[in-house]
Length: 128
Figure (tube, rainbow, N blue to C red):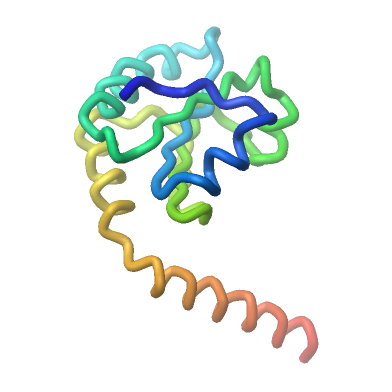
């Protein structure tokens, strides 16, 4: 499966409507982004059950700002619409495979419980 160019018009729908979505925030002038692109493309070919999206931070500046991208490339992974991984820097192929394996292996019920506990904890602290 090829990568998908994500724009602000389809970003949220893509993340919410698909089980696992990996997003590469990049720019054409960024050397590490250019080096990471074939690694990302190759992983997309191997993992047809994962959506691989690319966001051109130059063309989609508002989307990059909304995602709080401060360094590129930045890789984000979403599962069931929840951000479960975010890291700046170009990953070597083995590290990208580790991220994909880890995201596939997540217990999403546990992730949702952790998020809820964290939100409740923050709320309790704010009220206390």
